[in-house]
Length: 323
Image (cartoon, rainbow, N blue to C red; front, side, top):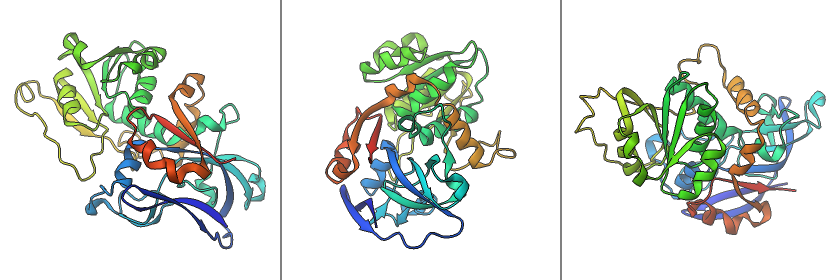
């Protein structure tokens, strides 16, 4: 028997027991050690805000149930292989599986965590994969001026990656001034919206990650002539107003969507999903990333805690501990 976190209705979470059944020939048994809540997407799921048109495209790889409810959702679990492929038993792996204490998974979906990376940090792999894909979609080059509007988990991971590109100047913009220390730890400038006047019309690349109309308007205002604005936010069933008047056309700006479901077109011919995920794990080999974990909760307490974690705007990566 396994225990899993299910959403049974809007903002209603429940731990359920369920039988695992027999292990198939191509599967491994994984005992979870940690998983991570992806607050933006999981909050939309918990609020029943996945549009009907996206029910199939938004399925997590090993999701059970169906949108809107009941559904078992999530995609960031780290655990140990305890049965199945005999040459891999005992291996610590990352798997795109919902929040569950023990589970079966196809062996090819159990991606080895490098020995140099703590399992507790490896739960960031799915979010790092999203950030990596966004950096590819943006096409950042050395020397670019990069601005990120929204210093949530994805925005901070993009800042971490962009700041490592030689001679880039990376600025983070967020309403929450407490994110300043994190930005500066990653080698980035930090501004609140009241402090961005000198950045206006200056950025070669702008990322928008705040999932708000106001944030998107700010991103457009910061873009330089013929700059690219990379929209990382997903709004679910919400509509947002986009300010396409003013200087948008005269500045010849571009807005492109970035979403992790497909490898960026610049890499797609050569990069299967597994290679991208392996790369995301390797990029976690930096102790500074531990600062992105904003809290941890024991799995047995998740039914009562889950929706409060999703509702808290201070949440970055909230980790679930299984044992």
